[in-house]
Length: 226
Figure (cartoon, rainbow, N blue to C red):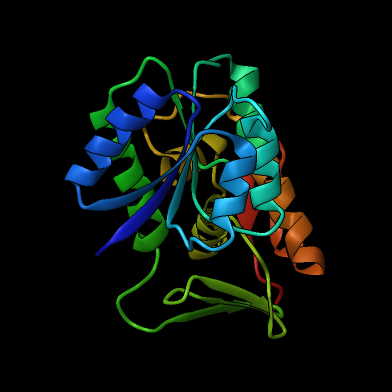
């Protein structure tokens, strides 16, 4: 399957190296050297993935991520020298799906991109299957969530989180279990990222968020009202 990635990075050497590794894996790579150029390109690109540097001229990565998330759920990987936990938390709060810090291995970056795409696409079953609760329907084939026929725009992480909760109805899921399933075993960031995404997910589900229960000192549980 041909995939397209938009690489947003102001250092030309890094762009060249990263692009080379992705192209070896049959990705089509589009490059932008600043945030404004990237946003202009993204509108007509229909990319599958965005790799986004934070410290850039014109418009920094935080602002670019925020603008992308205002209208798109495309997977985003931050590529940055900012490695503090608070920076990572901000990135995830803005809607990033993964975070790779410099210096980095281009080979590992490609592997993480593949893993992210498998998570996004791997939650889609090979057979048509609709999950439903309350007024919500989740189409695992089309990766589409609707409330009474109106689409709810979820980021890949929000979608994976919702699906994991629904599939484990009635089971109390700890933050650690959610982190391992949705963010992967190699995620060592702040567990508060789960709370942040639960809050965002609840906000998008509106009244239907009542199905996601907080279990004090334990985690979260999905329960459908009967």
